[in-house]
Length: 205
Image 1: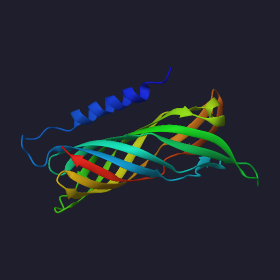
Image 2: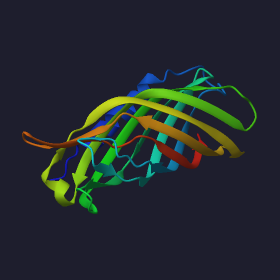
Image 3: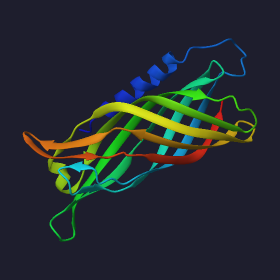
Image 4: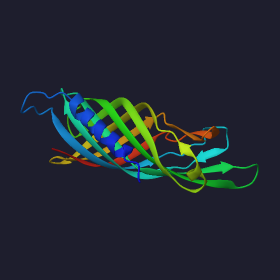
């Protein structure tokens, strides 16, 4: 049976996002929902303990739901699934492929949106990220990877196109470190998500 915890956690965070964003007066132009979908490129990393492990970059499709309130503030819930290949260096020989880790990063940020006016709308956010390793392959399939929560940071901008449609660009970072273990056997701790770059489109409703 597949693990349904990622879906339950995502739904819980979505409800938290809705509850945490207070409603302002009816008809306010500063209050509204927005949906964004982005292609996200996560950087590679060789920061591990012990050394010699490398996690390669991954490309994923990200979905985000946000609510603006108070004119200058918003909350955003985003999630994506991504596959990250893990290799290990053995002596002076070639890298040994260990398999892949399928990740579900779920991020909730609270943003400050600068009232710049015009078509360009920059923002910065801080919040929390919960990263769930829900599947593994290859040699890593015999090991467990712990779920971990930590702080998340975000900067980005929306660029209006026409009507309620806009372009979105953002950079995000969280502190997720994959702790790969099996029982009392710890294989490694590898920093998975040093930084992620996203670009896509969105619409307000």
